[in-house]
Length: 179
Image (cartoon, rainbow, N blue to C red; front, side):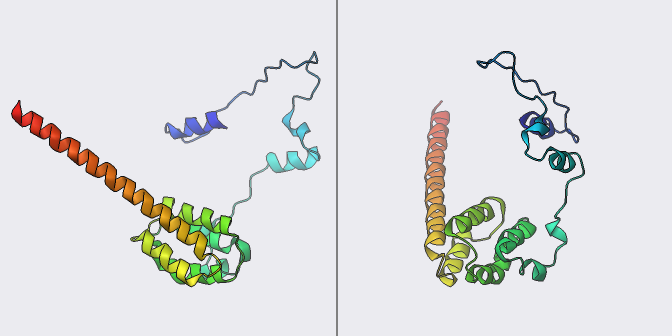
């Protein structure tokens, strides 16, 4: 799978054929196990049916937001995935607060979803966005405030790096002027 992924990352549009080879050096000789990967499943026929037919597609981009809101435990993840490329995720504030109020999610799930939202999505002011959601979500306020604190720490570190780089540039310019 990693070889196929690298093939796509360099610009190819189709997967590369990768020939599996197992180098065996176990205690028993010769190799005593099946070398057909479908034999690894308890129900070989079902596995063959699943893995040799076209996969099922769940295209969240075509779902209406109202329908997504009814998806219970999957609603928040589905909504975020549908709109992750939106110019400003804060437009989903009310929907996110509503879904969090249903208490379907653990703190770990909320942290994971918001980390994804912050890393891959667009929010004009992520700190304010998360802080406001935290205020509206009693159950997850602690988890969301932890994310807000992490964002603040990252911003401070980036600010320090920029200041250090700027200082280095100014020093280099001063040396160049003297030369």
